[in-house]
Length: 343
Picture (cartoon, one colour):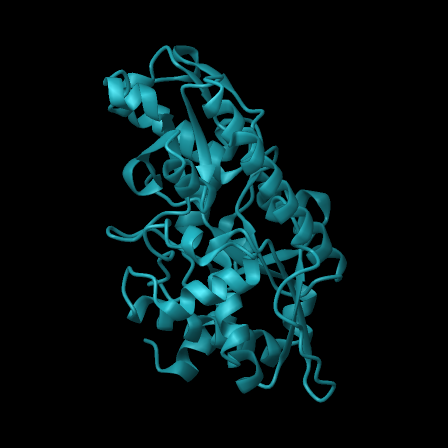
């Protein structure tokens, strides 16, 4: 069964760049080039806004490029002008960008955390250890073999935050940072290679469904800030395409409001949207407890960026600190809010 799951996931990931909703082209509208990994369900607002025609309503043609892996790979493309507005995680690369000569601005928040809504990252423990009572709390991770995922990633931040919340350090566990793919997570748990690991949705819920893992904690439980993704654009793009930037954010916020209005449940429409984009089955999507939470309407606080930078700087991954306000431009989102009647 494991081999079949790994093969299926491999085929799914290989096909992502070729499959998905057709990209309508309209030469009369200004185009916005964005990018997403269709397996990252936090990108749901882009998918929904595209499918419901919210971008077209704003008279913009959003061209969605698909990629596999981490969103950090997209940041150089934004800096070079090959992409316009893209959601990326606030890893070390975002804060190191100014020192590397990249003038990238954060213009909006993607998903957030909220009680009752499912988070996008989870610490997963082996089900046999859960069932035996060997691991029931984060304090039980002491002395255990764990994998935190690649340094600088949201899953890594979650595992490190979990240890800190439990009063533990990396010296109290046997921690690696080598597992980065769904196939890695499946194999590691199935083969008892680790006792716990960090994983992203929808794979986290799939590990539970397959009976090899149990969700222990998410960022809502252990971090004062949420390792989410932010919408970013270059300063040049914002300056030269102000109206288009605001229009893009208006459509995103409208889609976010639709999701939140529906509550922490999967509507048939949202399931279909995510299934069409990701090529996951609707049954697999329904194993995820809820959609992500977007109740903040995309608002970003400099203090939050500061907390994230502090976290990575403490690990030595941010070499030259920046003023969070210097990489944040809230004015396009404020304009979007104003036109939508959001105070």
